[in-house]
Amino acid sequence: MGDFLIGMVAVAALLIGLPWLILHYITKWKQSPTLTNEDERLLDDMHVTARRLEERLQTIERIIAADNPDFRPSMPRREYPESDFRNNDYARRD
Image (cartoon, rainbow, N blue to C red; front, side):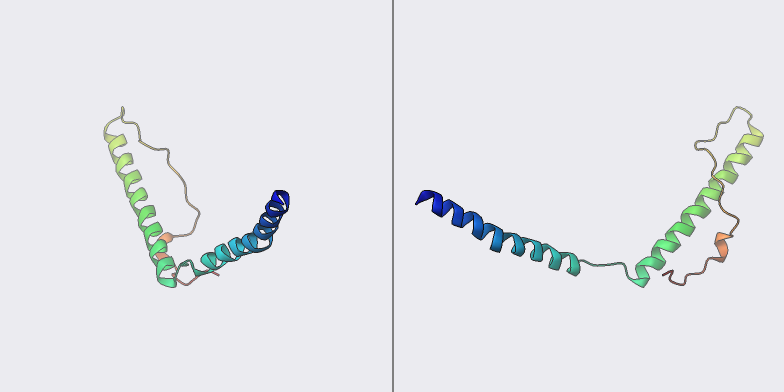
């Protein structure tokens, strides 16, 4: 009798519990918020601002390095593609 009861609980857990758990997390996943157009624009603005600040920092480091030969820049310089980030198009990229 005990083995039969354990078997029934295991079968019930597999046939009821597992699909319920999977469907529960699928609905939670679908209800989770996604990025809006405004969020994407804000991220683009922050990216452009970060690139401008990095460019300014590199300019300041070049000026300091020209005045003080012992100066070492804090980070290695990164080169960006040929595109000018000041003329950034804020249209959504799909």
